[in-house]
Image 1: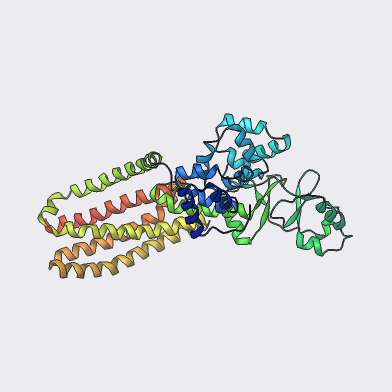
Image 2 (image 1 turned 60 degrees about the vertical axis):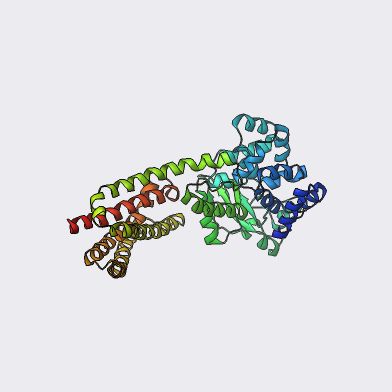
Length: 450
């Protein structure tokens, strides 16, 4: 299988046409000429029936590499159709961290059977990774590292490297450890190749290096790689002993998952949601979130019901009411999105929280005044009623500051409660801004028209 054949839209169309026409020989040839990433993309972009047909045409030795390029949800689709022997074959030749990812999607009984089928060394390495939560550095790391002792000469280190049939990719450095595996330095390949053969590794290595604590969260690891432009980094325990290393390809996966999570969770969907999942499965997943939204909608509707008599007297209120709620919702969403992004980047702490909330309040008040004037003029021209113009102007001045303040504070509160702000924030914010907007607008209208 080639490693750099990009899958174009034209190739995707050709494959789908060949599949419809039943030209299995052509499909098999094209499938097995694609890189694992492109083959995974093709399978992910196919309907469940097509996936099953395509999978049967993929050569067995490439199946594991292709599975590793899929999202969890799509990967589970194929794993559910495999028996133990097929899964054992899939795991052969895979990186330790990729094997751990696959095993974590399987029932415990099957996982134990697969672990028993491995060599003792591989089993110990996989179990070492599986000890740590998937969203930590320990869950991301690969235990396959290349180490060297500090008193080894450069010449010996080079000969040691040449003895290896394969080296872990990307291979950018040697990790220098003591006999108890304590990490004391990093020797980059560029320095290794340019130093005198007779000096020791200790004299050539870099004593100031970045090592990642095994319990560090995966999004923090991604931020560190981004800031420092790292290709790989060693992972250590609390005693500074080397446990493994994290490479940039694993970090790219984390960044992609974080981006998917930010987009999908706003609609109550999982970041690994399968676009072509079966109808029943998709409907079941979405039903829960729709039910939650229905409850919040009833809350907003009940607030409107409190002012039914006022709306009956002034019909224009029903026309203008959505404007206030909409402006508050948009303003709050802007603020909440900014704060969630800042939290994901690790930019928010105790020292700057108050400043941010105060800034958002002032911004909301400023925009409230500006757009209150605009809406008041529009309402006056529309209904020729100075009272309703004043009511909607005041309600905008009240609603927007409340909306942006809630948008700024809510993600922090949800995080403190161990609730995902990206998942629950939008529903809670919409309810609060709707209630605040309706209360302000209809409450003022009741006061002025009483």
